[in-house]
Length: 311
Image (cartoon, rainbow, N blue to C red):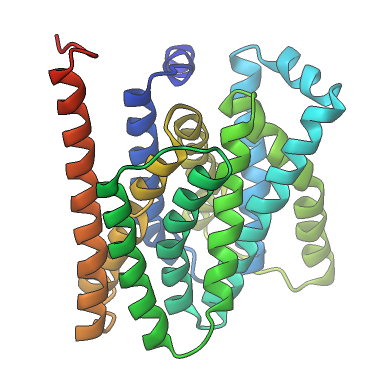
C-alpha cells in the first residue's frame, strides 16, 4: 500500500499537483485542532518533537520503499546539499516564528502572515520564475492585496511577525519548486539536518528537569509521537504539489489554510470577528472566485482553439 502511495506521489501532471496542494493546505488548516490537544506541552518542546518524530517517520518510509541509496546520493552531492540546507533553515525558522508568536499572543499577526504568504508566492512566481498571469489573475491579486492591506491597517503597525512568516514559507516554496529531489528524499534530508539540534534540546530539557514531556499520560504521548506524521504528511504533499503546479497558482491555493483557520476561530474557538474583518476576508474570497473564473476561462479558450481535448 505504501509503495502504491509513493508511486502515486511521483506523478508530474498539474491536475495531480493541484490535488496534492489542496490536500496539504486543508491539513494545515485543521492543525490548530491537533495543537489544542497538546496545549499542556511547552511550544519549544512541541517544535523539537515535531522535528525528531518527523525524521523518524520519514526515515521509516525511506527504508520501506528502499530509498536509502537515493538518500546517500544526496549526501554525497554538495551542490544539492546547499539547497536542502536552505530549505531546512527556512522551514525551521517558519515553525519557530509561528510557535513563538502564538505563545506571545500574536495570533492575529500569524493569521495575517498566512494571508500575505500567497501574495508573495505569486510575486515570486512572476518575478523569479517568469510565470505569466492574465488580467483576471492580476485583478484577483489586487483584490486579495486590498483585503490584506485593510487587515494590516486595522492592526495599526508594521506586522513584522506576519511578514517573517510569509517570507520564510514563500521562499521555502520557491526552494521546493527549484529542487530536483523527490519530495520524500528532500524532506527527509531537511529534517535530518535539524534533528540533532532538536534531539539535543529535548535531552537538555530532560537533564535540566524543566521538560513538560516528563509526566504525560499515555494518550498525550501518542499524540506527541504522531506529530511526526501530522507534520510530514502535508509537507510531503506540498513538496510534490510545488513541483507540478505553477507557483502563481500555488499562491492562490494557499488561501485554503488560513480560511479554514478563520472558520475554526469563529465557530469552534469563538474568537471575535469584526465588521472590518468581514470586509477584508470578503475581498480575499472575491479574489479567490475571480482567480477560479480566470482558470475556467483560460481552459475554455484553449478548448475553442483546439489546443487541448476533453475526453
